Image (cartoon, rainbow, N blue to C red; front, top):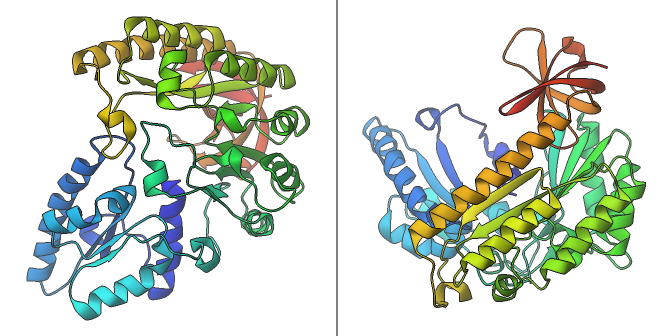
Length: 425
């Protein structure tokens, strides 16, 4: 989502004459686009601002100016604190207001002071954004923002706001414009993307079917989904729409019913396992990835063992796993029985060890298989192209340059620590 937002900020600023710079030293403006999911995000922002302050001061001494802005969820949650601790910051803006960046830049220049804009506007920002400009053959397309689930550990409902779904017509129009620019793979984005309901009688499943009819679009993905919104229609789409990639990120967070209830996830272990089984039955070649949190308040060794058992039962091919981070303002931050940090670290290491074993085993099982791969960029070596498999694995192949941007058949020949090697099939 932040990659998409950053690109749209660049689109908004382009009419003012701004374009990408290679480094902060070369820039007229630096925008830190932030995430607030984890505990140390805010401190990383202040650390980076300290580095940028030196560049800003040197620029001023040379008679120039470097505009500093902080955007995203840290800005939304801690806007006034940012200006208190870093008064040299020119602009602080939340994730729902970046369509107003040109006004903020002008206001900062006129007033000579900081601009703070973290209000949730009544109008959707998407209605005021210019057409996206992309380079390459893969693109993100934001269709949904915010979340109404209120998991007890999560700040997203407070920093991104209530769930909002873009209208189907707007989404499909943006998809067509992306395809006209050469995009072949579109990833639909949302904090709770499978809760998208663009208009009456529209659902994510229907949207994917319509997107598959857009000329030029050859591959479709979506992220991040919630188990509570994985209904019959969407499962059927996985079986029936070939362009929808057989790879689904379906966060579970824990394998313990007790912890899932404390997290307010709205599903239990058995419900998640039934979903995984139904999805794999609908699309036998489908692979799952997930999110896990270890050390949630009150998590016992037995709860952690339930998570490890779930990992073994489902067989995830990729995962994101984290130690629980206490987020101010969330219910979990006030829960008793906070797990000691050394115990969190031990459990995370054990979980990640198992997850890595599963990823390696899946990658090795791909050797000898043929896959349709979108070759989207040159490799490090001459005559080499790099693409992504249907399962998001980086794949290297010796191939002619004219194949860049094409979906080609490759046969996997070997496995490297972080990628696969292939030859034309």
